[in-house]
Length: 351
Image 1 (cartoon, one colour):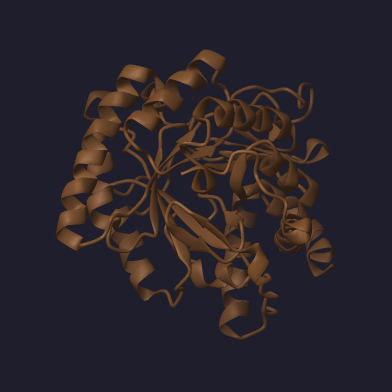
Image 2 (tube, rainbow, N blue to C red; image 1 turned 180 degrees about the vertical axis):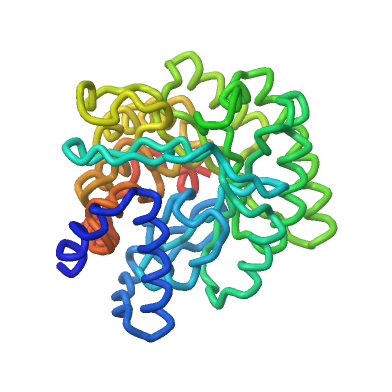
């Protein structure tokens, strides 16, 4: 209720300004003890995925907290897990501003941020300072000026830095805002990248005495053949989870609206159906071999239920939080805990 009163003020600000203002305000409220404690989900709502125990199946998607500056404040909202990043080996400013646009009529956002972040070393410092003891995913990418043929070097560099701190690590190969990045989703390129990363993970597991799960985040703009090829690579390399989906370069549902033709990835309500279709197709292609984390256009508890119903094991939120606020977290947790809705394809149950 409170967020609905504050949102008009936030929407009067430029989108990126509002983004930073909101996070800083949430952090300050949390430090003052003024963020109401989230009601713990019942034990029946817990999930065991990737060998990790999740207190509830609703997570925060990467992109909201790129540097891990606000982990503790965001944790207070009741998420079952938090994913931070995308982080790159070296700091980079991202694309020129303006680079974040609301399309209010469609409950959508277009962003072309371009992996703006302070670099992996800063993120590691922030994670170490945080009090949060829950499930933490760290999303990694490559620097914009790293040639595609050397992308694996950047991913391995990040993996080494975050390995000891992450509950799981997500390999982001699907942002539309880093030139040619999505080419890494092609079968040959993906095979080469995952070969390098799984070998690096084996070495790190031996050093640290633990195996940290790897997830891969894919785009919603893949066709059936491409989804099948990705699924084959995920199975081949025993990847622990796949996150579907990132933002879309399509403009379905926003044509003719202000900012609709801005370059970048579209998220929010117009992505709901497209992301759900990819999750369904991916879950069928994987046959339960790899769990799917569903993200993309979750604007209500009903949307979260749909993602689980077509094959996701967990869900993540981002743009829905901009339009609905923290209430969306509680709504989704409640929706997924009622009657204990289960995914059609639960990898843990099939193994």
